[in-house]
Image 1 (cartoon, rainbow, N blue to C red):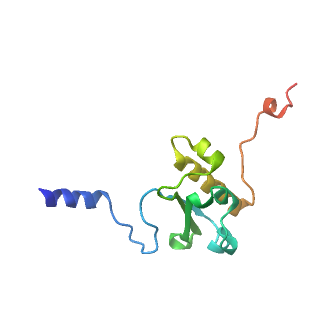
Image 2: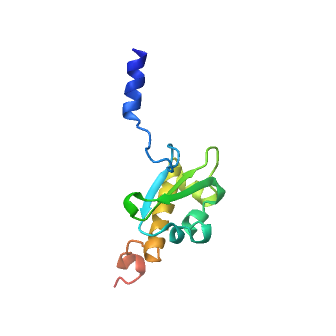
Image 3: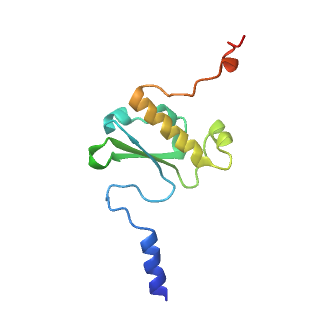
Length: 127
């Protein structure tokens, strides 16, 4: 019975076949259509991830089939997000990491962070 349960566990949690992949657990990943030296220029984190300080671990590796770079981030075990990020995160600190990754991807691919257009009322243009 125990052997059958262990086999079932392996079947539902396959190991990542890539030896250069980060360890499982808590990683958020985006694929960026740029080479690694453009994703982390000079080894520096993009601004959206830099704002999270040392509370976040960042890693990059080539995307499969030469399709750019995979940028991964996670909150370090036992670390707390700094200042406003901790307040905004609330009950879902991974949301802050996902948002920072999405913004880093946009910066690398387009040179700017894209935001939804505000309504004329929000812009003060309503008549």
